[in-house]
Image 1 (tube, rainbow, N blue to C red):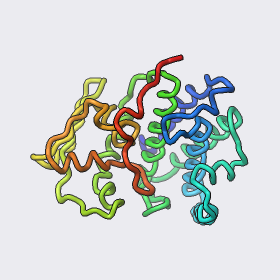
Image 2: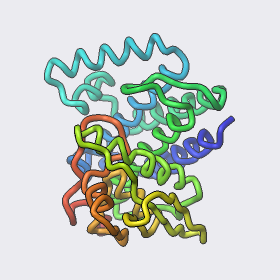
Image 3: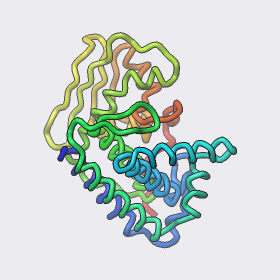
Image 4: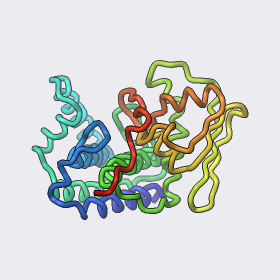
Length: 268
């Protein structure tokens, strides 16, 4: 079994622990992420894990599910409205239980895959390591909006954060291609300091660099923070351009949040 499965399982468990402590009135509270409620976020994660489970266990079922979702979206439904409709408005603790069970089943299915397996997804097929990391990244990044809303500091980061930094670095070209822009020939070098005494480095360009705290870098590439609100520093035109459009997740191009719009709110 690949290490990324254990990391994804741990990420899901950490979010479950946070959600399990919510009061009944918390689920409908709007976060700073597109005004999605906590219910909306958990529905989104549950639907993503449901699709991933279909891909891992029955590719034909995944293809059919994707086609059905796309058909509903063409009727004018937003992504979150389509998910809400598909789940019949499931919310609160019943939603939490359903998501937690599905995430566990997904981890079990991914654990059975050989290390060289490839799985279907909305875009090109993905290797199982990157596929699993993408689910961890989604869980980690959407959890940030909930921690911010509740005014709670996240638990101390663990080495599994490296998976998210890795996907952030590896999607350098994707951020450009997704916007129809030419990809710079050489990516910036990235150097990150971690809270557990390690330094992570991806060496490429000598003239363009991105440096700083590993947690902050992961927040920037997942668009949970604007780089101006972090200690991450850049040098060189390519590095600056990348951070202005950085996006490590699939889907339509998304603009990073404006400075000062996503932050940990005061604890009520």
